Image 1: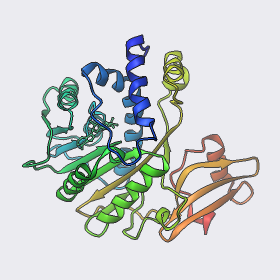
Image 2: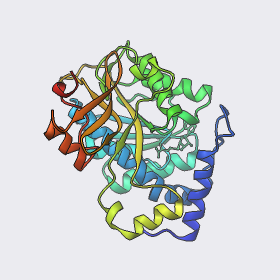
Image 3: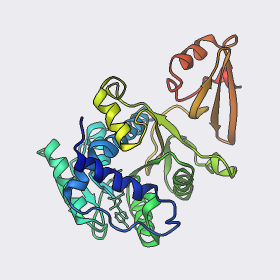
Image 4: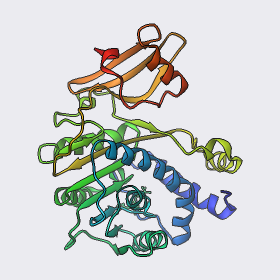
Length: 315
Ligand SMILES: C[S@@+](CC[C@H](N)C(=O)[O-])C[C@H]1O[C@@H](n2cnc3c(N)ncnc32)[C@H](O)[C@@H]1O
């Protein structure tokens, strides 16, 4: 994994646009100039997003979402097709529809999926009109949409049997995602990260947001080229904050989620403190080494080792 000067320039140009906070509520104009932009994006920014999808999709699987080799999957705002690629690996598909306002991106994503899965049916599309699909994926797109893009996304969620949305774990994107979750919770089952249909507890406050940290592959810590790529791009590839929601038209069988840990627990010599999401609100829970040495030890070794705190620790 080493980046050429041209790839680095392209990634930095894209990142500057994504991070530009002077844009306010204005939608970002189409920024893909050619397929080299998408190729460069896929190598670092896309790879990083793929690791977040791996974490989100693993949780969906553990929450009872089943593999479906017959599904038609729509990747809304597909970019280089990272979400669809990860979804096909985890859950299978019969056909993938790559939707982007950029025809260059939609074609790139469809080709990327065919390259990895030569037998997969793929189609590049620029509108949801006339499409029928089972699974809707949306990745890092909610913050970019104007009113009509958002209306199209809402309509696509409403037409899907399963909708999985993953966003960067920042305050604004996560709260936007929680609002969308709340909108659809009356008509769809919430499968993950929570498993209830009450209002998102993070939205009951004005300062909190639902977010998690994914773990990158080991190579990010051990491979000097990844370290260099991160440094050159100006991004910490070891920190992967993300927010996600998985909605399903049909209920799934899974145990209740009681004390879902948000963010990264803070572990010290005698205890570990974690923000946990309960159905009726967020709480700061403390796991003491004395009362629950096994949980404390797990968190001490790896603060991201657990998704939930055991009941006994928090009740
Ligand atoms: C930050 S990129 C994310 C790409 C990809 N989903 C990923 O996670 O790597 C956002 C994508 O959404 C697309 N996009 C933005 N507004 C859109 C709209 N109104 N309709 C369809 N695609 C849109 C952009 O062209 C871009 O490819």
